[in-house]
Length: 201
Image 1 (cartoon, helix red, strand yellow):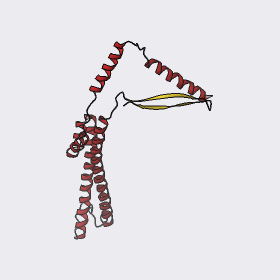
Image 2 (spheres, one colour; image 1 turned 135 degrees about the vertical axis):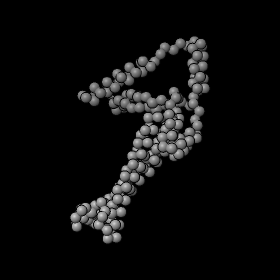
Image 3 (cartoon, one colour; image 1 turned 45 degrees about the vertical axis):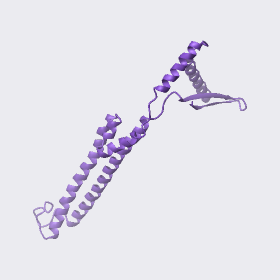
Image 4 (cartoon, helix red, strand yellow; image 1 turned 90 degrees about the horizontal axis):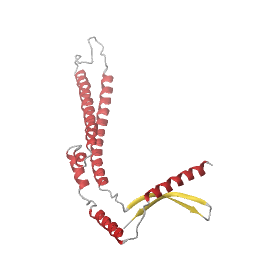
């Protein structure tokens, strides 16, 4: 019962769409000439495809992140690219400084000094030598992950500019259309609902 209602609703919507899209045609030669002129104008106004545009966008983004997005006139993507790459650089520098702190303290302990910032004022250190080693390993791992993410965001910035430049030149003129279709199958006494892709040469 629900399927029949759904098919009837889809059928009504499709017929309404097709009825609005139809227009009365006059068989006079004047109207045919007007249609031919419109077709010629549409052919003349199609954009030329620049095969180097995607390469230029990728090159600009490789030089300066966000420059390829500006070339594609997608200005809202520039702060996103800068934020992701800048965030990766920030976390890399921060983890590198922390790694250097713990490494310097560990080196002084190996040299016999007890005056590093993690030793404290008493005879027993606040952070042991094993704790310093674990901290170095953790910050080294965080630093490597930050570096990998920064390189990944930089590559993603280049790929985004290249793909976006390709999509800006995608052909979406009237010769290529996608529309729903409804067909009644007499052999099986059932209806078929689907999508039709039309391409005019």
